[in-house]
Length: 151
Ligand SMILES: O=C(O)CCC(=O)C(=O)O
Ligand SMILES: [Fe+2]
Image (tube, rainbow, N blue to C red; front, top):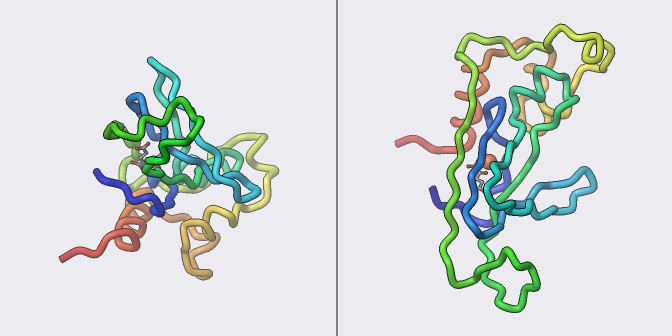
């Protein structure tokens, strides 16, 4: 898949396993709205939390907003930059079965948290959807419909 630099998004599933080769470019949006470059660590995979885990934990685990920036600045001091090379990554998206509800998992830690409205706002659900238990399949369909236009 080819990413453009301004395609910021959170992942739709529970976890994403990401394998990056040599060149950085993945950036994570911090709480204070700064973009933080994710380092490329040789022989390691990067695990990204997706929307489903944020729903299941009432926001205790954050579905990170991220983007991939095509880097071609030859003066950059980042040793992960390789301006003349292509960038390759492989993402494995873990999803739940379509009929799995996105209500919080039973847990003493999660029970006491307030209803997580951040994930609803981040995903862009309408007011009326808040507080309803939607399913993994409904969530995936919604995210795909918003992100892509079908012929
Ligand atoms: O290529 C990457 O580093 C990340 C790609 C990504 O964010 C995605 O496939 O959802
Ligand atoms: Fe992603």
